[in-house]
Length: 110
Length: 115
Image (cartoon, rainbow over all chains, first blue to last red; front, side):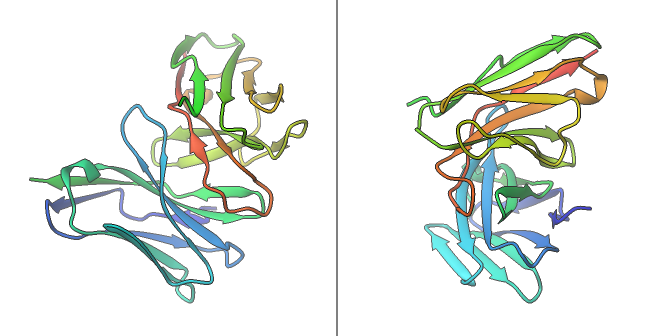
């Protein structure tokens, strides 16, 4: 039973345009959501997070939106840069653990 | 500034062999975690340690054991390796686990193949 789902395994975006990565969750008890970025042969690195009491959080080019009624969050990257090419994982925090989605591979094309 | 260090980076085992994956963090974090990453599955929690002296099962603990040796080190042991345990293993740590939203910091992973 996948509690956190990223339904798009891959996404291709032109450099300079907006990248939108989506994530759905099923458990309304999750109270904190995070996005991680992963390059090949490296561990995931924390990117940005949002508390369930907010609906938006910005950090430079990265913005995370949370729609609690739809149990949906999204990560917007604008403008997209070649260095953003990586696998992005969303994660939901509840109790003592993080639950990860399957990941979306983002490719930024020149 | 090492962060989370995992050893080894690569390992090939035969079915039935045993192995211990090592993890150490230098950030004075209280909580440590072991995950496995498989294609299309994301990261799944194997075991975690909320604080020194405690360990708890995660989502996929079968076939594994862990030891929280001290605050810095958290090892993962495969007693009798099986091909289904072929995966990339990640260790992570966070300042606090229970009731906290501190981001986890990950090591670079151990790529393990079981033949």
